[in-house]
Length: 196
Image 1 (cartoon, rainbow, N blue to C red):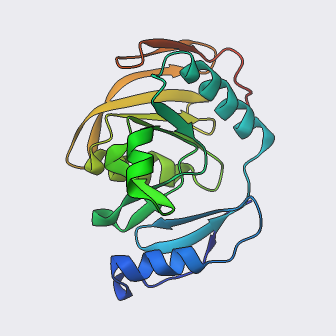
Image 2 (image 1 turned 90 degrees about the vertical axis):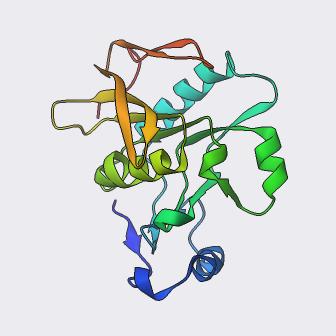
C-alpha cells in the first residue's frame, strides 16, 4: 500500500499551523500520520515482515540500553527546520526527553538513535528525506533496514551527522551481523530478518 498525501502546500503553512493540522488529521487506527517536507501524509499499518524486524531490533536493544531510556514505535520526532514530523519505526530516546516535552512528539535532537524499516511506498523517504532530517537534527545514529534496496535487502548504520548528511558507518546484507557502537555496544544479528 502507498501513502496518501493529505496536504499539498508545504510553503503555505508555518510550522505551528502544520503541527495543528497534523494533530487534527483523522486517520484509521494503526495508520501513521507524518509531516514530510511540509506535506501531511497518511500511511497504512506496516506489513507483518516489517513488524517482525522491528520487534527483533527492539528486543536486542532492550538488552543494552540504560533503564532511563525507552524504545518507542509511535513517537513523533520533530525536525521543524525541515518541516518534518516523522514517526520512526523505532526511536531510542531518554525518558527525561519524553517526559520533558509533553504533547505528542519530541524534538528529533533528543533521540539517541532512529530506526527506519522501508516499505515499498516509503523507501525513498526513509533513505533520503528522513535520513537528512535526522542528520540535521543531530541524531547520533540512524539505522536503515532496507528490504527493498536495489542490490538486495541491506541494513545500513549511519552516524557522525554533519549538516544534513550522515557518514555510512557500516552496511551489510540481510543475514550478516552489524555492530552498533557506544552507547549501545551491540552486535545485531540479521539472520532471522524476513526477506520480502
